[in-house]
Image 1 (cartoon, helix red, strand yellow):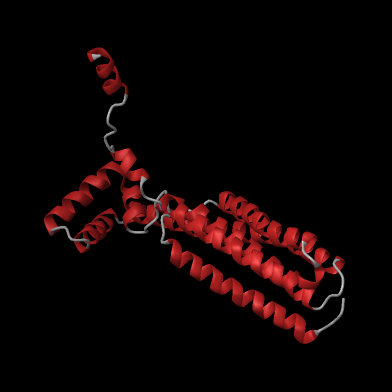
Image 2 (cartoon, helix red, strand yellow):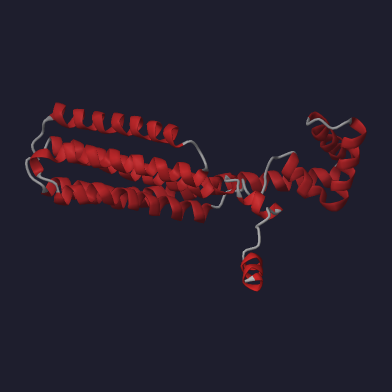
Length: 248
């Protein structure tokens, strides 16, 4: 019995927190791709649903609604991916340009750059002597890295990745847009707008929960924010359809 107890105790050692495990509890490293994914999924759900509701409000048959929904899905996914790639690439170009300019300044006026770095650390709470010591040590190790991080505010976590953002955004848009497409395929034509609205709100709530959990943010605030703006967009789209009243 004594041997069995010993084996049981040693086979389940207590898990002590390590520095790596502690850092894993933070979510800021997910911010770039999560932002693109949430934006894409939200846009896919709301824009395609809103378009489908607007067309359904002015249509007496299913075919125009399906056509508009499918066209919106394809065009929206491609546009989202392309737009995200272009915008993030522009951000990357700016970052690279600033880094190159900083490297030139370090080569031309190293002493002034050292003083600037020390002032940054001093403004963050270090004493003047300590700030200068830290600046000198970091400069000796990698001057450019120190200035890129502490003067320009560019880190590995904050640096943009155009391809990652484009793929996440385009795929998320497609995933979000599939729901209104399924609704337009399966829901009764006479109540199409209401089915689209209800299922879109449900999808937005799910998206709010998933994005909040993935990013470690408050769930309630994410749901309220995403549902309110989704409702406004769909309501205005339906209003446009009813006001024009064109039978298609």
